[in-house]
Length: 230
Image 1 (tube, rainbow, N blue to C red):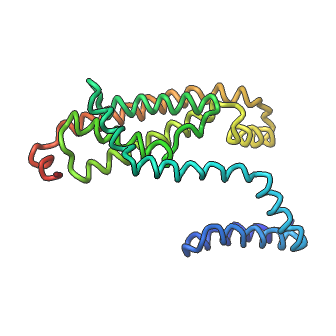
Image 2 (cartoon, one colour; image 1 turned 90 degrees about the horizontal axis):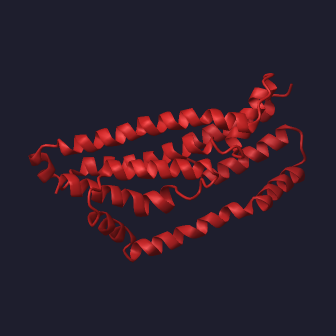
Image 3 (tube, rainbow, N blue to C red; image 1 turned 180 degrees about the vertical axis):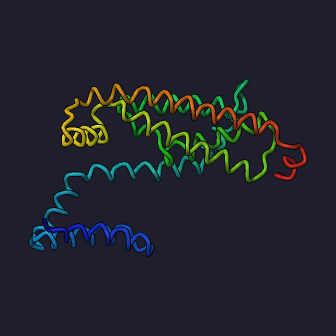
């Protein structure tokens, strides 16, 4: 067995560790892997070009980023904060628990791109969570404010990660199926998806508990410390 093509992995690790341009590192790694596997240089370039052409629709998602930037410039975050400030009973914990459930449910039916950090967390979810925390507990210290933003991002991660495996046509389920099948355990994607449901429920309960516990902790901050955060 020829192990030389695995040198491409070492190139990726070394390139990222040395903080080289990620695109350049990946391209060099792909070229090195193909050449070390015995392929012709033209054939390797042709394979890269075909892969890019077949998946060019992925780059369409970047079009939304300028739109979000334009909306933020004209007050999207301020509108989100104002919406929460006018809602009765809205707290950071309750808001993020609702978003967690929304993220898991939409990911479970295949709509995994409906949320995300650039298009949902930064312009909407984090400002709304921050406004809800200030509404319930007053002005927050800078350190706690950053923790609220971090928890908003973590909520999106948890919701997506444990929700998408319920959708049986997701790539992760197909990968798990292939691993089990190669080990002699033939399972259908639907069987794997069904067994992902208890894990998703546990993730919702555990992370939801963390959110509510953080909300209670913010309410116990000393008044002097809260004033200092202004």
